[in-house]
Image (cartoon, rainbow, N blue to C red; front, side, top):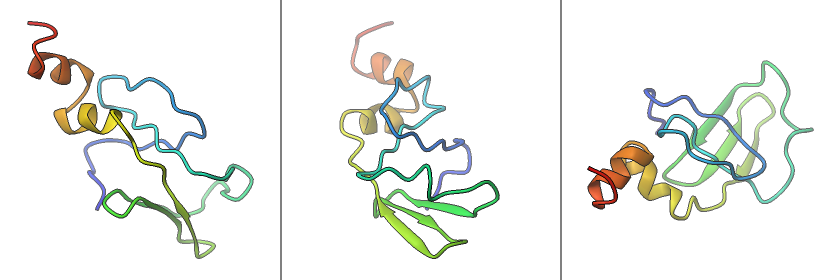
Length: 87
């Protein structure tokens, strides 16, 4: 189930999480040649699957690791506040 409040961008390499607005999901394989403009994409966060509904293909997503904690906190600043890193 996708959180509609957070735009999702699929990235091949892990980048910084900017305030919880960008979640760096990764796949084990390169998919940039398999997904085209206008393909309908769905991300099942709970199952860790990216689905290309247009082409009926599925890709496993890598674990978010410590970024998951920042996402669940609502961004890096909320995470830092919750963990007494900033006031």
